[in-house]
Image (cartoon, rainbow, N blue to C red; front, side, top):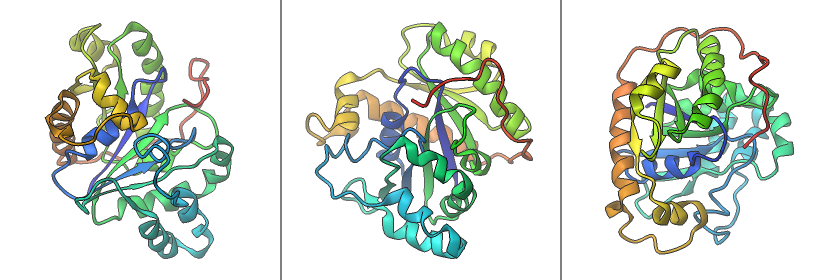
Length: 265
């Protein structure tokens, strides 16, 4: 099965909301994995704190010393349902950004366990920076790494050095893509020309539906009829097309540059 990493240039473009919207329209079994070093949002957001908190990512990480098989077994125990279908689940992320540093040495085994799942994986990796604790192994193992951003000059300026960092890390930009949130701003051709990577589409700026997914506000019934999820379904089809392409070899470690300093989102 395929794993897709969604990242952000910063400025709250809605990576988690987009990941959830795509997962809720995904045609096969899928797992949303909260790999954001700044912490996970789904339990306090979509479920508004009403779901008992699983240990999630931390629970799987505790098994790292026992080897990959133990991590995979524990990860499967930590998966929680996203809906009533039984095909959509999520792995809760860390609850305190101070835990991110401790995750750094176990990301390789976590990434291997995720990519070995009998389901597609959408990894919410949050804001990409050059600091310790970034889920670099998840990015390495991903079929595609997608920058989720709004079509603004500010977001393009923040995305450009991060695209350069990723291209160096992954040994090229073939696996990189952009997914826009909203269409009020720069044209997709301008953004594609500035960043030099493929564009896979746009999801609508749908605040009412986004509030359901991000904060659990409102009813979850008939979400599939709303603009956000209809757009997410098309974005999911574009991701699936990326999965059919050959994966290039990986490059050197992600390195900090003068323009890549920032705090986790």
